[in-house]
Image (cartoon, rainbow, N blue to C red; front, side, top):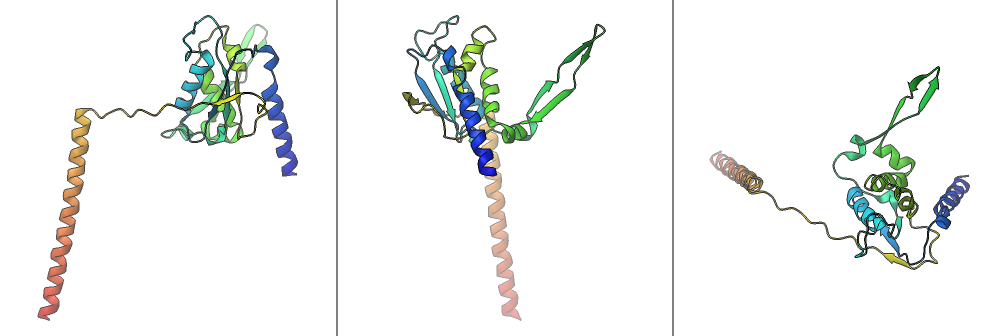
Length: 214
């Protein structure tokens, strides 16, 4: 039963992945593959939005669609920093109903990032990328060029795929005040440890002296 459900889900995902390709002019486009395993959600979405807009090309023009196809694998293994799994929420309304010229606002729904990852992790990456794109007429075309998969399985093996290498993460240096505070904290911890060790040694000496005297 579980195997049948998994097979049907995989078939549905593959059908969804192939949908809309006829509306894209694939001539001259590169197929860039992003591996989301262990990547931070925001950094990955920023790189995808850059490639999908064509900003990494010298011929980039804001009003023309020159982005490449982006295939994202292992969406279920994406990482987030801090406490976003429990603190980040996706909110939406169920809609509006027009009755007798009166608007009744629908009920507010919300879902945490943790629940969304369990339900559909591909939607997490899709929302992160789409919210980094400009809201203009090219947004729908760029959305069609984004294909996200939960694991490694995808139907584009016959395409010339190019793995995308994520740039190294640059760690910002500490400001002088923060650096001094960190050094003071380290010295304080070392002094406390030395005092604790010297106290243990003195206590041990007293115990030995008491044993000798008795």
